[in-house]
Image (cartoon, rainbow, N blue to C red; front, top):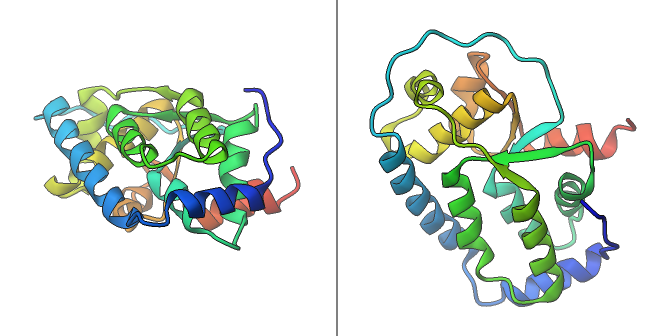
Length: 199
């Protein structure tokens, strides 16, 4: 992915213009509902399977939509924007997502009209490789999520199958993280590990 020079302050200013009359949290809830509907259609019932083996850490991530939402709402706090740009333009980082997460991103991305937010959004979509997890991976993750969180279950199954770390601030993933099935970083964890720590 070719890195372009993006001025973070200008990006924040343009995001503010795009989001002036948008309730981003309502938009995110609507996108999540659509993603949940799609996830329930894709994985109505998954068959039982034994637990998959342990995974080696890699720089492969599933970036939940709340990273994008936090970045666009950051205003003066540019570290979240820096994290988003790091995920997009660091060639050592691979982004993956299942169909429900891509649906959420597409819904949210419709509001961007300014050139820099559109560029960032389009780069996010083009860099993210689609991986729809197998029903077996979904079945492994299913006990950790209530039925209304079908898309989150698919996000976790994508991490399991792709050996990816999930970056999210959603607490829905605490149980599956604590069980050791997938790695989950908060946005602050990701900032500390990818931005603040010299690699």
